[in-house]
Picture: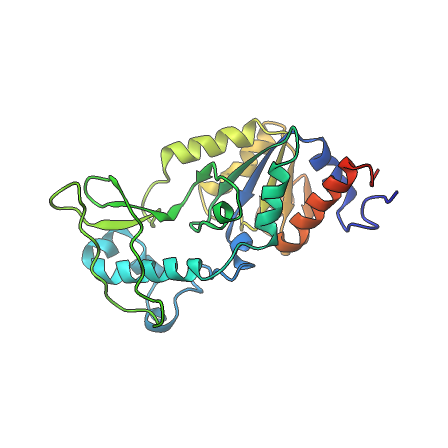
Length: 268
């Protein structure tokens, strides 16, 4: 039999906490999706938008000023996300959730759908979703528009769809823009599952963006151990119970494989 860290590369303390935890909350950020090739907000400012400030593309004021411009940029984001696949880290979380007597709750700051496409339900998209569009007036949900980018690059202006429920509304992306509050229900659920977990795993987040950055601190205040999984130091690193310097696509499959081996009696 192998001991942890020799055969698997998983730190012993990380493995021990994951093995004993029955309810696990996984908080994921941009680093989780970056390994699938999803550019961060600033990285996605390519081509026609290289000289535009992010705040001009993702604020209520920017939307009201030029809806067709903002709509085109977010439709390009939809196209970019649809063109990539979940990575090994996404699939590892889905496998972990299938273990007997395990409950894995996913809270993500990412606006993509890669967790869902890997087979994991997401408890809370705390910054909204690219795939949950809604009316900018009556707030009723609407289907995600089809991006017209199958063979061409980005288009600088695309008029938004009209709301089918009200006379004056137009369809906007269901993401949280600058100067907008987080969805209260999503953040409440996220805070709850951070405080009542046996373990919180923080994957690929900077620890900077508020108020989402408070979530792992809520867990620690409740006495819940928190593991940070990230290749680089973050603002949260000094506070984590354990820090594992690895990427999501490498570390999560290794951890879940180790847990599966232990369940089969292969690792002590």
